[in-house]
Image (tube, rainbow, N blue to C red; front, side, top):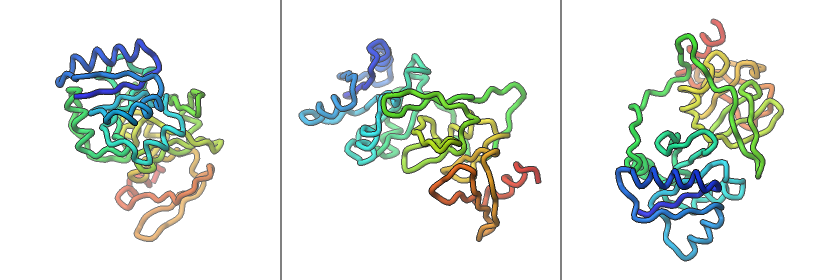
Length: 244
C-alpha cells in the first residue's frame, strides 16, 4: 500500500507516519509533501497513492476546485493538526470524488473502531452538562479564522463539501459533516437540521411559510441562494422545536 501525507508541519507528518506504520495494513511506502500542488506535480510522473492524508486547513480555493473537478480517485482522509495529535482520533470525512468503498477501505486500513451508524435524526437531546462546540476553525485563502457558533446562520452541504454561512453573509468551507454537526457538536436548542443537507440557526429564521406536500419553507435574515425547505418527515419535530 502506497500512502501520501500532505502536511506543512513536519512534526505532525512524523506522527502520522508513525501511526500509519502501526496500522492494520502496514504501508509499503509513505511520501510526505508540505504543499498540495507539490503533490500534484508529483502525480505527473507517478501513480496515485492508495491513501491520501491531507490537512484540510492547507487546502485553498484552487486546491478545493482541483478536488471537486475529480482529478483524484484515491481514498482521501481529511486531518486537522490544530485539534488532534493522533491519526486514530481524526474525524473521517468522505473522500471528495472517491466512492464509498474507498472510504470504507481507508477505515479498514487505519483500524478505526467507530460506533455503528446511527439513523439520521434532526434533533437530539442531551443530558445536563453537555458541552457543545462554541467555535469553528475555517480557512480563507491563507488566513485562519475562528467563527463563533452564534455568528453562524446556516450549515449546508453542496456535493461532498460542507459550508457555513455567517450572519454577516460570509461563506466558508467547514471540515465537519452535517451528520457530525447534528449528532454531537451543535446545541439542539439553537440549531435544527431541517433536511439532509441543511442546519439552520433559530435566531436567524425570519419567516416561515406553508409549502406544498405538507412541508415548510424558511426565509433567513441572512441571504441564501437556495430555497430552504423543511423535509416532510421533520415538520412535526420542527414545529415542536419552535414551541408548538
